[in-house]
Image (cartoon, rainbow, N blue to C red; front, side, top):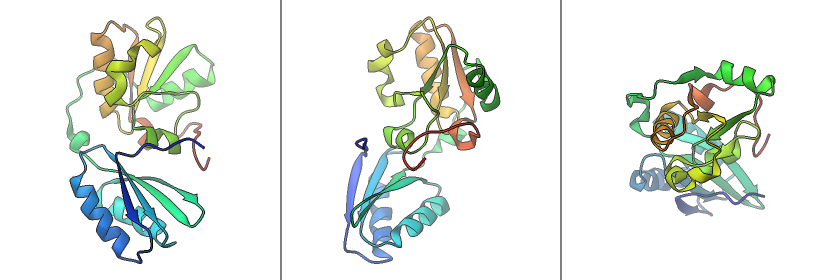
Length: 191
């Protein structure tokens, strides 16, 4: 089993509804946008409760891993990234990327979402390098290959594509709208 990376872990074990949500809300208020919160709970109803709460507040429910009696819920704090202005001009859509993959074209799919987002759901064979680690890990990418950058909505991938272009990568494409509307094959926990 992959080790899940969360920015903050919240212990809500032994608490019944509504306390896991109350504590989650408080913890989420202290997180930076885009960070991942792991909520450890024993209340079986917490899975549905936290998923519904995340959706109603605009945060992203990533998934839950059961380890014995403990449910580990992963949530990503929303940001105002949906309103960020996009600047990278070389853009394609999900369908074009899916066709390239079906045709077995020699491309690299770079997923710049957080490790927990990637672990629960990603494009098979995609390389996971979270946006915050990209500067330090660019040497893991082949500059000669066509690189398709994905994230949840096309915003973080836009920033990643700009960073790669600034470092001499000449064949980089931002994929929009990204994983939020990906209909192709996926891999990950619970898949």
